[in-house]
Length: 187
Ligand SMILES: [Zn+2]
Image 1 (cartoon, rainbow, N blue to C red):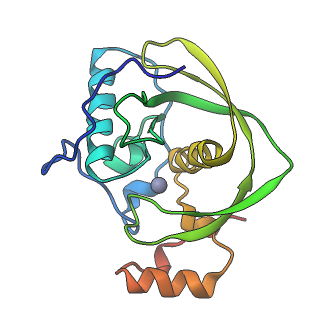
Image 2: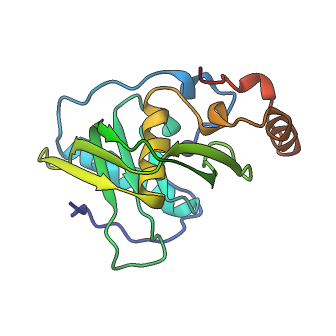
């Protein structure tokens, strides 16, 4: 269900929250389940959305702004004022497809690095929305990829951990000022 939280989709010179970047240990710390869904949390959701829109992102997970809570915001149409964002609290994957697909990913925590990542094509996820209502969602294509990417952040995993081509990865990271040492390949 689309979010009822309304935030103006515009780029702020000073977004309310600060992003953490690859190499920062904050990104590696797993997020905790949220037990209280209240106005304070909804304010965090608003600030995460404002930060995401300001940085031209389509998804943001709370650990990226230094908050270790299981909270994700997504908006695949940041330029469309009529498209409501998606807010996922305590998301769990119920099912993933056997079909795997490859597509390029990027991340607000690793600016300018875009690389191919293999992921299941579709996912079914259950979560709570920003009013604590339980929801389930079957996602495919870009939305499925985005949900998996953001859920990785909740487990301290970054998309570069899933990149197969380590030579290209090392080159792209160093070109953009990041260290390959910061990558923790997933088994
Ligand atoms: Zn990311």
